[in-house]
Image (cartoon, rainbow, N blue to C red):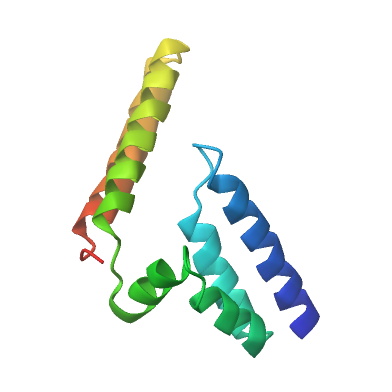
Length: 117
């Protein structure tokens, strides 16, 4: 089972790395998930991810306090706004825009009510 957890962790790191370059793919949630998988599979990989100079701090802050860095909050907000604007430009049906808007608003409320990291 450890190999399954490790494989899932490595896949999440890969998706997280892609998310660093693709605006609609979230990086930090994948890294948090990778930390979860590595904690169950490999002490070495888990320690590597927690000590990573780019992702480690965000993972530790989330784990310890449920905190999100204000810069990450702003980046998430801009990304969410761009996705919604794209949906409007694509002329999606009003009911789809309403559902999407409510879900994105809920995500933004969740993000902005977390403590600052």
